[in-house]
Length: 183
Image (tube, rainbow, N blue to C red; front, side, top):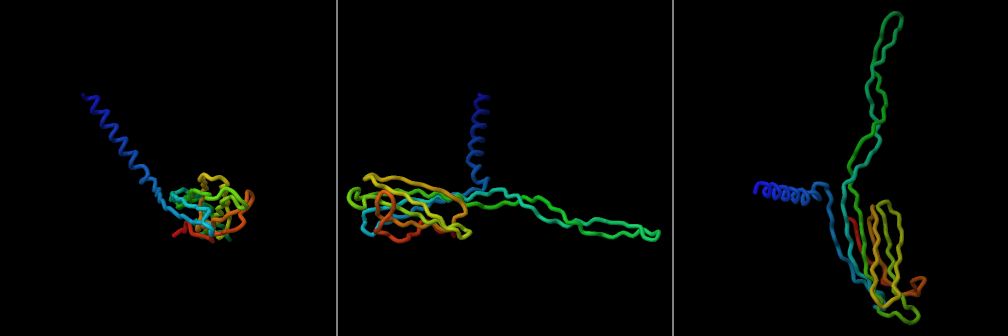
């Protein structure tokens, strides 16, 4: 009976530690869904969700520190001393918050035949530094396809749903629709 009690106490303590671990690490996760957004002819549809992980990470930087140093010199038989500030470089640890963003989408094609038989979604990604990049996904099949991408230091994500052929989007654009906006 005594051994069974010790085992149960150990299991309870381990479960408390496992449940408390994410809050101790300082990680926060939020989910937000977006869409559905349609092409202008309503033959392509995109929708999905965004997962944002806020994590604390260590960041090492160099800091200039002025340390006082006593300097002495003999002059005409007398010893003269004074304090000089010496520049030193010191490595300092700081904590920063990094936002890791995962965007998942489902692209549906409601017309998989004809001239413009593919559904396209183009993501416009704007970083916190102001740089812009694009990611494109296509679905030329009648079944819904799932796509995803991730990144960090992202300020805005927009999507444009359109129709096109196998190589590029051609028309029926939805315009840039908001997927994620950093607060």
